[in-house]
Length: 347
Picture 1: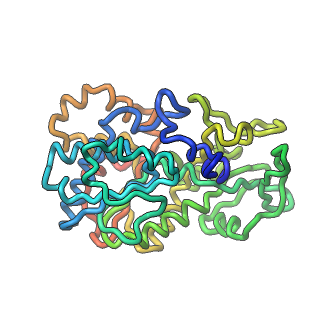
Picture 2: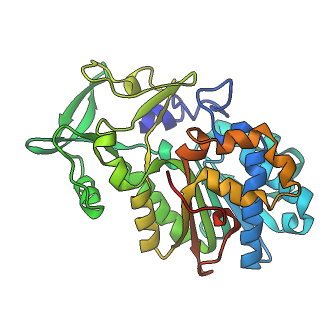
């Protein structure tokens, strides 16, 4: 999965500046239109007011070609030029091709760009936003058998799968930590990278907030009979395919480097790791309720309600309910945030 997605020469994300949208392989909230960034700006501006910082670091992790940051910055410039002038934008993106397209995307907003690179800033004070980042981290796939936990490996030039002992005791430790017992026959994914990432981000954040937006579940649901076949999925041309029982080659091994690979996020482990590093969980809710809470912060909420872009963002069964928002704070207590004001609910 690491090679298929991120190899500098052949990786799916490495070879293009943008993979989502109607002409791409999948659709994100950013592809809906500028309204997603405009709503996020309401929350980010409120957070900036809580921090009272002279310089405000806005960090976007998994920034791609900077479309989301551009929408946020444009809204900030239009609504509050003083706030806009305080923003120092940090774009974090693994793909060199995407980084190369960022300045063109930002255009006349480029005066706010402070840094662009593959790693998070060493230290920052402000807000870190990660939209659909954790689901694209490489995962370990494991299965419970009668003789214990086994891991899926990829072997040989034919790219066949086989099972063997776990590559690291961290996999069983992960399950033990969240109190999960897999039944024989269950196959699931474990995202050690997501836990490492949030720990690292928490350490680098001096003071401020982290907003994670992704699809996934609490551990009790993700590691249950409901998802006993796992969630590892290949996406191409807006079609997805999971593991087919009895198939000689699972979909995620076909055409490596030519399709997206993704797995649902375990929000329980992400939250536990964040709190262990000193972060405070402010909210965990469906994107629907997050967006509706921010709606009243827009200049003309009634007009926005009639905007078909908003309906796409909040529609149950679509982006609104599949995508969850998890918000952390550090050094600011537990302020009441507009994005958590409508309803704190996860479906």
